[in-house]
Length: 404
Image (cartoon, rainbow, N blue to C red; front, top):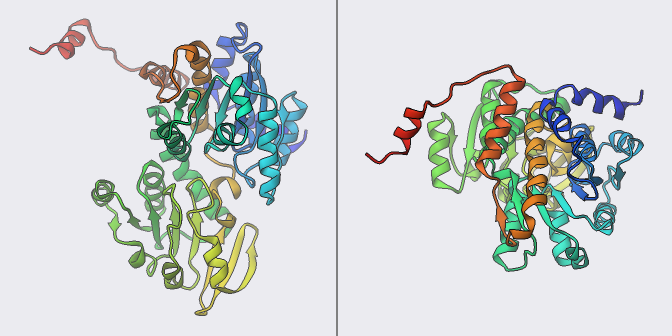
């Protein structure tokens, strides 16, 4: 058995929610005749989502949402299982974009997006596909922000379900998923001790919270940088130091960005880093750490380890960048833990089913899934763990609904 098939078989054992959805809907095949285009980090867990949608009747067309996160062995295994795949791990941005275009050439009825690239291209360069496109389900914080901006500009033409804004997504995927997978990737690729080190986490959204929490659990001394005063107060109350980046970088052994924004580090910040500091990005795109500035400030560049690039700066200090500044947990790792993505992909599946049923009556704007879907996924998860909870009595329900 080849490695890609092995990886898919492995994750299938630990995704009880997708397995339950397959059992519930595969006989009904509600997605029969529907084409779903996916632009998502293509590894074993997303492959299993594609296979689940296919069991529900969909024609699934898949590409990657990041040039370096595609695992070629998984892509090949998925092709052999009958899924149309346009993806390869590549440093070539043109190849990446060509694959996005090939998915749109299939004229999908629905899109599952991760970061918004496929949806934005459909609304700008490939407006021809909007004739057939009925809705989009978006996975990430960054993608939701982009699509809300598209809506605000009046250019959004189809309804979008912001799966990222569902509680069963951001409370678990963004926090526990990003927290664990980011440190998995950093430790795997550096083999460095985290305990006793100073870790600077840029951004204290749900991803930043998870990264800081896991770093603290590993024994690091965590410093948070923020632009939001409310989140800064929260970070302090959670036990972390808070200070401006220009002060934090002077202390940092590791800097991990998770802001969803650009140029989190300035030229001055880079030159202020300690000798041997490690930089990693856990936001979505490779814009948080300004790689061009790093290249310009370097007098020498070298491969220190696989996925680790060393830069000797003009001031004599050497700093290390992981995964070329791309999403470290996927470009240099396996992404979020399997059970976490089982939650997120259950929501993605229900989002497509929701759009299938309701798209004709929905306006072209960004929606959240109904809370009942969150509760359904939560109850499915509890059932898979053999956990039971209490229910409100009729008297308790009336009391909560009463104003007297």
